[in-house]
Image 1 (cartoon, rainbow, N blue to C red):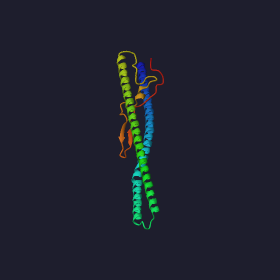
Image 2: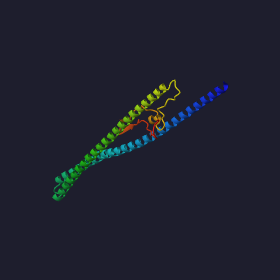
Image 3: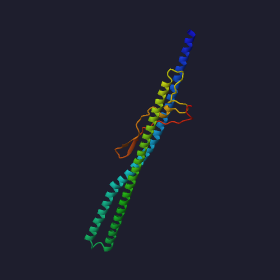
Image 4: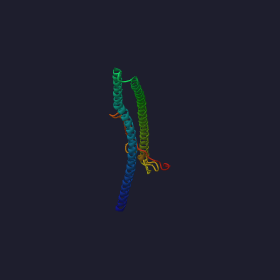
Length: 229
């Protein structure tokens, strides 16, 4: 009958409208998760850059002392040594007291050089330990990202298989299949995000010797209340 066809057409249009609204809601949720992930990535990148700046500063200090102070000390020692030689050669003009004073100055300067060398060794050791700590933290971050990625991957597989099983079980019946990827209070689509099988974080060694990380963490979500009964 024309009236029944018209009602069926309206119901079909209403279902299409509901499906469209549901798709828009899922898209909005995915965009929220994407923005959250970008914010987390920016924070971790800023923390990594701060660590790299601290390491670069320590390297610059060690490098500067090695290139500038050490040649200056050697030049000063040679100058004092030449003065001592000249003093001994012209002993008739310079007294023993002045010669001894120059020798004491030489010994004092040599002691200072040894002290500075020990300080440089300690600073280099501190720098090495800090580099190891940075590398260890990056390694832990990569392991955590890989674990999270694997959990999200398994959750995505389980929800898809349950949804397909529900559709198969409801075929030929009036029952509506349950979409396990969009449950009340547990939106699996929001948990897994757009790319549930993305790669975990990887470490890179820069040309200047610093470390950098490319993030690939999976999406995260929050469960509001219990699942379906």
